[in-house]
Length: 134
Image (cartoon, rainbow, N blue to C red; front, top):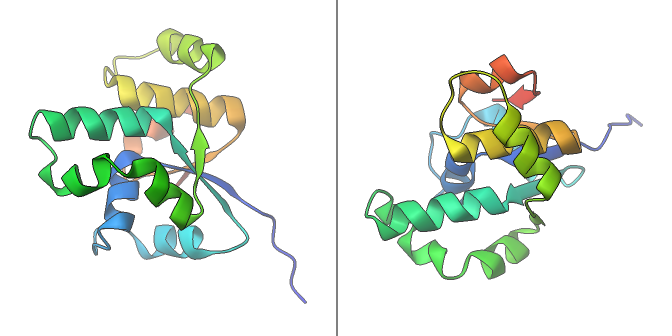
């Protein structure tokens, strides 16, 4: 019998939406990791904030049905909520570099602080020494 370590994964916003919408943009590797019962899947409060904000201003109409039932939907999927702590916020604010996206900066800080692997297609995360799966 083969033993596998349980991975703790943090979904980037696009990865979560592509999973929920079941689109082909989500990589096979990411899809396999998300579907594995061995892994813990986390969704950041920053992702909820980003989805709600972009839905409200019309930049993310595909997420409109999901916005008002996010907590229930994530519970049904078995995904865990990751709250934003003061430590996360401080880390995000102190991150070096020119990357200005506040949502990404929070995800980077949370991945670093909680030792999570980010599921994202954004290679900018690699500049911040976080593990990324795509």
